Length: 192
Image (cartoon, rainbow, N blue to C red):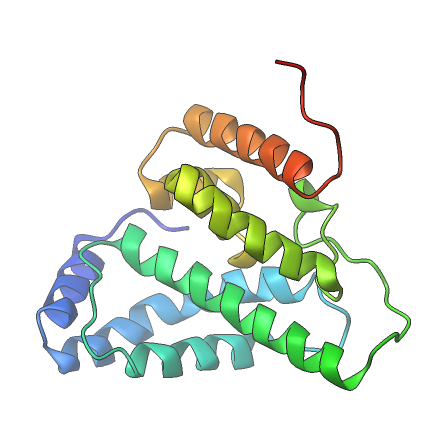
């Protein structure tokens, strides 16, 4: 991700303040970054299932539907983008499952750090529920996983978005991953 931009923050604040024209100025600035992130995510999907451009355009439509934008900074904006892409993925998986029950699926990791989650199976729904639980316990760790898994950020990029050090991001991700492993039944809980 590029370095934080005061222009981006200013446009986000203007849009949050009700200036719809700021969104029109904002989109060309963030589109390449969002498209690159979506491309990284889509590269992990089976060919032909979704295109990065379509994912970003769906995100743009969700942004247009915001009655009152609340993005005081780039962390809030990219957090929203990660959550929106997560929900788009969940909706797409649910629609696919309702049409193709029992189809042969190829296991493809969401990210190298989350290889235990198959984005084309019920695992993604389990991950969604687990992330919701984790967010109630520790929102930053849940946001870290969400940025990495659904927006395609690496840990350095997620640290930048979250405004934390890379060391903290790595620790957060490792703890969140361990919690998710236990929650999703991938390993037993450690002894007290």
